[in-house]
Image (cartoon, rainbow, N blue to C red):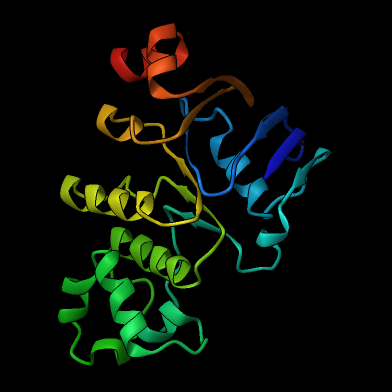
Length: 228
């Protein structure tokens, strides 16, 4: 998937993305980082088709054609007033085994065990679960659909360290998925596991490379990682 000179601004502002170009490779794992307001989430939403470019173009491979192939998972996720099963499957035909397996992968087994009716418990949005549980339900929806491209936007921000680490493991272990993880809080042990790191500032790509390359450079990413 290639971004070519993408430009986008929010209405009546100068905030957005300026001439962003980058060749993302299918199956690789990317970390988008930088200070808040740098344009990370905007890039993710453009890739996911939630916004449309003013200039430039997004080129997707044929394998990523279709509305289930590129999915965006946000920190603030919506929970429907429906059963847990339907919240995960969105009415599509998946077996209980598939649903239970993805709930386990997304650290929702304990949440499921607390529900009197299990998968058939009706979640009374937004009071049935915490923000962290809602984010994991949203992630489970996405993983169940086996996307070719998955954008994860700050979904571990409100989770405890143990659960956040487990979710990071789930994301990084997804096979054959182009993963784009967005965060402004970078952990060294996590960053070194990504194929490439992109640092954005004021809507522009400032640096990109492996963690080793960026640390050696001692530029913007280095200061975010070690001087914050």
